[in-house]
Image 1 (cartoon, rainbow, N blue to C red):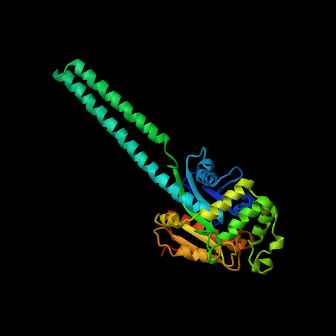
Image 2 (cartoon, rainbow, N blue to C red):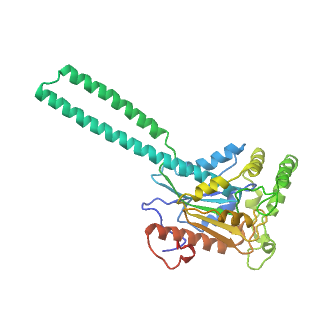
Image 3 (cartoon, rainbow, N blue to C red):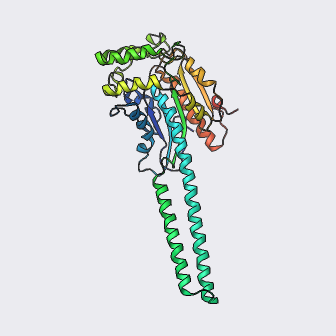
Length: 356
């Protein structure tokens, strides 16, 4: 099996990879990383039309539905970086909840159908017996059938309404991949995030010069090692275009900072860990924006699903740009692990993600 082309689906349709970028950049920052995995169908979030925190959250929540439109199957991975990782954690809990509710609705609809079928069969027997035994008048038989028909039609209508309200029922979240993210960006100690006063100052400066705020923020992506280290892609050689074009309106930039100020995902993370969905968390060892302590705190949460924590040596906030080989190896091994796990096979090349 080619680790760059892992096979998941039992049908011809490709599984989806949904990419969610962070604050102050655009989805173009993902393009090179996504190109290394041609077997998947890639979709990218856009925050361009988002003016509020609620609209950003909704954009992420609706991404699987939009990406899977017209498809018979909706199997997907979500890959979230920085603020995008925080939004992905929150959305994943909602997706799983909606799927569970939808499955319950499907079971209810099946029970209604089975009840209608049984009632039809029972009513037919009554009609036959009435005709044979002449113990019931024709008027009574007809009246009984009419009453049953009204009841059955009402049940069918309720089933249709239930199906219309169904959301994400057929979608299957295969895994969550988090990159350089945190459960809470605000940390006044600075150990796992930024002090609140700094983020609030950024919001104030946005009104004066959004371009300068973005420039200063993006300059903090890189670790000291990345500013010329031999083992990593040097920052001067990176394309600046993906960083220069932010996928945010002025109001959207402000909303993004508001989200970073208020988001506390400890409860959502606990709920996600209580499910069977596997999670890969990649973090640069020298990340200056979301320090490594953020990953360590998240690792303390026990759960049911597979949780793989990986640290990329010397990397800063965007290891998919500066440590591409290491990034590709980790993500390839993850996808291969999931593929082997799905097939129930053993494979000697995936010991790093062993369930043991």
